[in-house]
Amino acid sequence: MADGELRRNQPSGGPRDGRDAEGVAGTTSEVEDAQEGDAARRRRRAQFLRELHEAKQLRDRVQPRRARAARMRQQMRMRTFRW
Image (cartoon, rainbow, N blue to C red; front, side, top):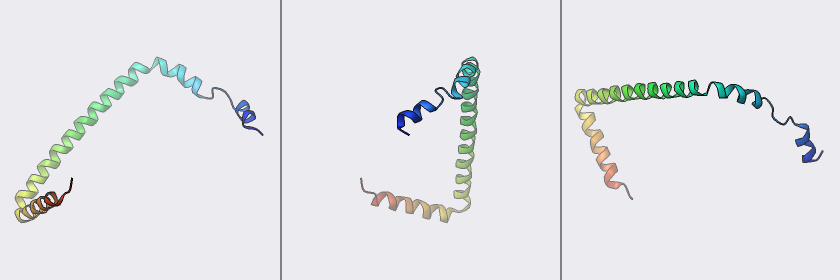
């Protein structure tokens, strides 16, 4: 079988044609749902980052020696970093 024969035997539109007709009607609600989902995801992410930052500050207060050692390691890393 040649490549041309394979292409001719395959259905031209496939199941996509049915979805396109349905997708046009529900486009606005899908976009609104996506925007609300993005906003909710951003709120959850912001809350998570706030809690993470608070937990790191608490850990630094509770374990000052470990926090100081971590700061020193970070400073050393930055000093030896090459551009």
